[in-house]
Image (tube, rainbow, N blue to C red; front, side, top):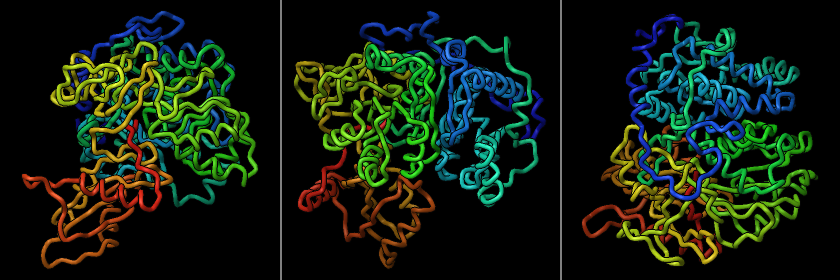
Length: 601
């Protein structure tokens, strides 16, 4: 099918539907879900706890229809309104060829569009592929091609749309659905946005590639034509570097995601999450799997109001807390630390917040204690990874004392095994340190189109996390190191290989090694070491400027250090461990905290 063809045409070839359907139907679980069953994780719906995401939204509309579902800068939508919009969008998506096996990308900041299109794609039978809207054009193109994304949903903001527009046609997109920011703002803010921020609005071509949100919404609702969805169906491709740094799509089924959601709800205990009474402040981006599950899916399960913020700006956060009085705040330690440091100066009352889950990086005890003192809430640290939808363990949410330094207890239905890293077939006794391996209904079915990578992280049906830890006599998990070389910045995985490959594109760079160094605010920040080719002399500032055009902001090194040589192994392979040890010694001498040693989501 040629690009730009009318949207009512035949999409069987253009969307590569038959090939993708076959791939989706060929998915077989390779990870055994050992352990006691969790309600909601079964293959068939049981009514009260759906095991598919479209059924979850239908349940919310039926139970909480008149309650607010979304708050965006003061503009609200009820669950019934969300349900109707999702039905219409699902109908529009079906009209442009979205059906079972079609991959739809969401390149969106936190806005109502994020929630609406997530559920609309799934209701139409498609698969959601999450994209960071801050990705560079190169990163977007690579993921579009690898995931076989054929429809992309994007904002009309120039800084988000422009990188996508530069690669859309060449990467194989058949349609780009464009959503207007002004269309979801409150009336006064919408008018001001159109008047005074027009330069931020992208010019969208009038062609067959682009579809405006309003046109998609004008289609008839999907209604009874909605395909039947099973818990075993693929729901989301969530990209992660895994243990190697090469981006891979973790295949998360409806059953994986709903199981993890119900597991978290069970952990909260009686009265922990109150149906129809909670308001979740969604600071973390919904394209991040932690927020997708803990902020959005859990909200829909309990009829909570999602208070959406597209960026983390303390002034906006405090203004939103004053206006909306959130009760739940899932976040990363960086967010809690920033709030701790500024709450008193801003005179904001945080006492409406009653329960929080922290993930993505280690939570310092002093940060947790300070935040709890300011709010009176319960702040519990958890652990997880993309491949587990993502939560694996969490400290008690029911008032029991947390275990200092621990990431908590395994979720219901989850089994954690500690295996010998050198002999992974051997499970180690309680208390011994080894590789953390996970079984449970939330564990992915594998990596998209990467069977060898899937086999590499599989041992006897369990997922090998690459993290080193031990379990104490009471079942609490402690993480002490990680096998992976990844850098965790504010809860985001940053892969040294990505930074190194970008730097190698500079004609003067001979060798490069990227590592994580301690950062009091972000936990870790990237730093890169390089040697130069003979006769060249770029400065560190020039190399950083070069990288700024090739890396996202979160991946940007805080420093480039040029050296005459870099450490190598006995066989001549570049070695980062000496540089890590050197930076660690330097940080300890300066009194800086150690870098985070925990897998991000």
